[in-house]
Amino acid sequence: MHESPDDIAALQDLLDRSYANAGPHLLRIHTPDRRLRAEPLVELLTGMRLLVLATVTADCRPIAGPVDGIFYRGAFHFGSSADSMRFVHIRARPHVSATHLPGEELAVTVHGRATPIDITDHAYSGFRQTLLDIYVPRYGDDWATDFLDSGPLYARIDADRMFGFSMPAH
Image (cartoon, rainbow, N blue to C red; front, side, top):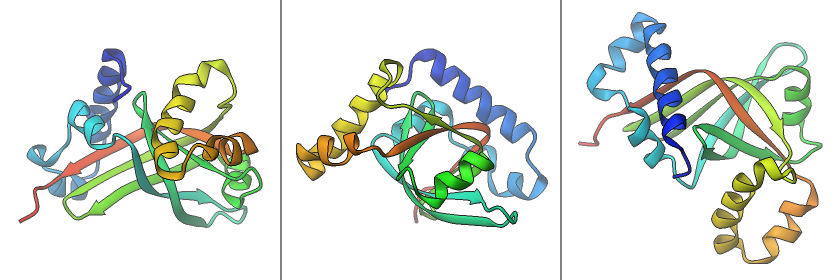
């Protein structure tokens, strides 16, 4: 967990605002006892969490695909190749939606803008270290030079809305 107390407070405010503006259908499913609060949500999202990320094509169609999601400092981050269609779409139309849905007992959905970040910038050294902590044990020491230093792009989802749903499995 990399979130500061201010990050947790901002995340809780985002969740509260999101539910305050949610429609009746979502509110019937995401009853108060099923809504995740910021701190337990952050704990559940530690490490790499597979996301389905939706971007918008030039002809305004949504297109979704899997990405490795890293929840860091209260926001989802993800990476892809610099020449991926995903980043072509994001550069032109930055609005995205993403969902982490490992099963029917947990769903985390975020809507917002993808903001590219430069992981070589000192300001993102903590995020870079988080990537190393996650991937080097899995893929070996060469991952840092063979992949991370080869030029992938990363982005942070600056959320306008976020919903966290939890229901214990029966």
